[in-house]
Image (tube, rainbow, N blue to C red; front, top):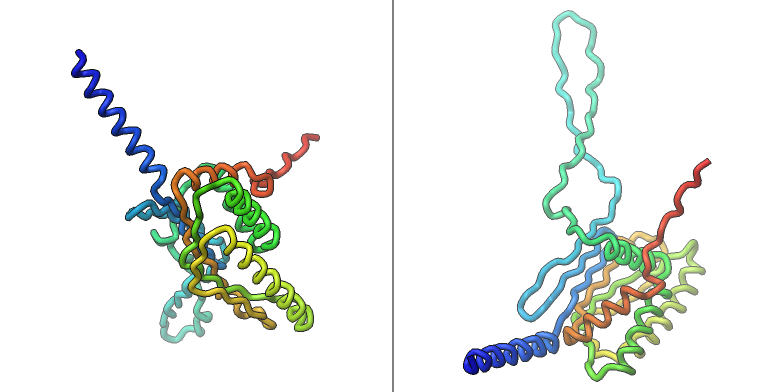
Length: 239
């Protein structure tokens, strides 16, 4: 009986050590935003898996198929050929990963803030990073940061003014980020787009990693953040 208890105690110690090591190993999330897609992948050690891939729903042009004309002898000319629009079939690459409604709503809220109010989203992220810098002994790292963003307003004058303001804000944000996390960037580029033709080239991609216990704590804080709560549509009133 004593030997069995010793074996169980050794196994329990081994499990505890493995759990501690697993919590201290780096856990990361690879984020990629483009105007037509947003993708989140989890990275843990050598393993990488796409957690959520969302394709922006935009009207797509179908393929135009010409209907051949029917020939007839000694008959009036047939009407002009009709054009039939065949909608494209969805490919497997466009299939989205299903997530719980709460996580889906928060991610969609983040995408909406990124497109409509990026300053509010940046302030929210910087607030969480400052909290981690003050209360955590572990460091977070941002690797392979690739940012290309354009500034477009109604006219050239407003675009130039907005570009100057956003460039100053970007430099300030980079300085604050470097004080709290280890930042390794491949490209950080902001430029004015007076015609709006380069909006489709916008891109934000990076890999955020830290120890698993710190990353889980950060996810909990983001989950509870009031700014990132999904927007609820008011129910129609019954008459």
